Image 1 (cartoon, rainbow, N blue to C red):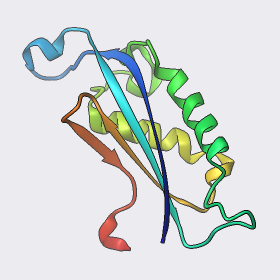
Image 2 (cartoon, one colour):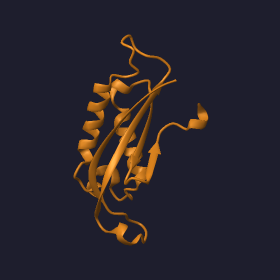
Image 3 (cartoon, one colour):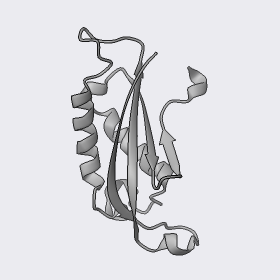
Image 4 (spheres, rainbow, N blue to C red):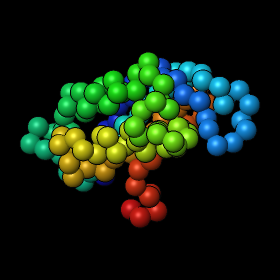
Amino acid sequence: MYRLAITRDFIARHFLIGGDWGAENLEHSHHYKVQVLLHGESLDAHGYLADIVDLEAALQETIARFRDRTLNQLAPFADRNPSLERFARVIHEDLRGCPALEGLGLEVRLWENERDWASYGPDRRLG
């Protein structure tokens, strides 16, 4: 199994809803770090799992939708808690539509600080 990953960072704001989480209920920013991990069984004629330039362009386009924005004000989070887990899934679903990633396994790992992360992707128990 081949794997290829890139990691980028950005800042976005949010506030948590639906519970009493103290300061997290107030609007605040995070310096997010996102890692996109692709996996697949074979390489193309150039020896690539995917063209890293295409992967980077797709990720930068996705990040641009969230960079310096308040997540709660964006459609994927309308009336929903913009949790780290949900945000990882939103990024995953956005990238899944990229033609350059077609046929490849995709996992998104998202950190909201140096210690805490969530991921969304295939169930590793399945293969």
